[in-house]
Image (cartoon, rainbow, N blue to C red; front, side, top):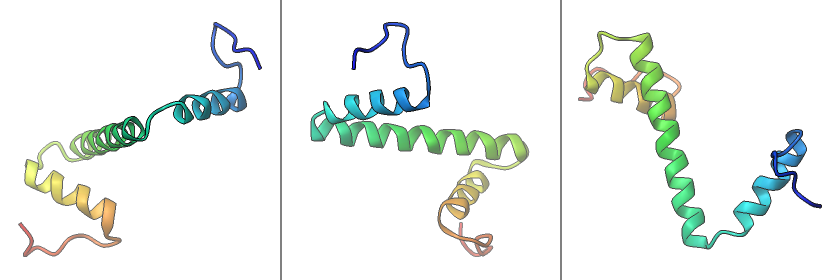
Length: 80
């Protein structure tokens, strides 16, 4: 399948293009890409928490990020 220089025309073409690109990466580059995407997702989550709670300290934002990622309930108060 020849790629359109203007980019994919639909979601299926975009998915196929992404798979081809990822398969062409070395294992170490794939890992680096995954870690970069994780950092980006964490940054977006932090930004969302800060938008919803502008008065919270960085420690409170970090606690909420951990809660969202790992726990269904709020973190206990005794955790720093």
